[in-house]
Amino acid sequence: MEFGKQFDTLGFDINPQRIAELAAGEDRTHEVTAAELAEAKRLRFSVEAAEFVDALYRRIITAGSPTTAPNLNRRANDANIPAP
Image 1: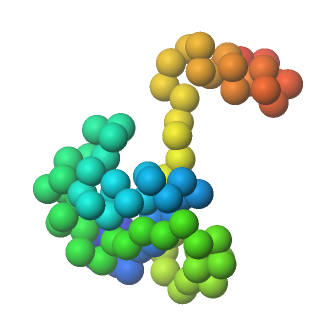
Image 2 (image 1 turned 180 degrees about the vertical axis):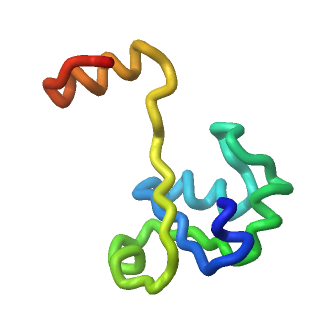
């Protein structure tokens, strides 16, 4: 998000609802405020993989991140790797 204040930046996600929310200035994870998103005038969002690959912009990928131990363990088990 900070990159989008100074550089052309593409935020990418495969979830169209997530992209629509971010484009409307809403972050359901509450990691950034609507005001902070509005300050990132050079940040745009897309669900198009081709746009992500072909864009000549700095890229930021938004993705759900496990923030609790159960999620970490579940994701580790899904990947057959030991949890931290």
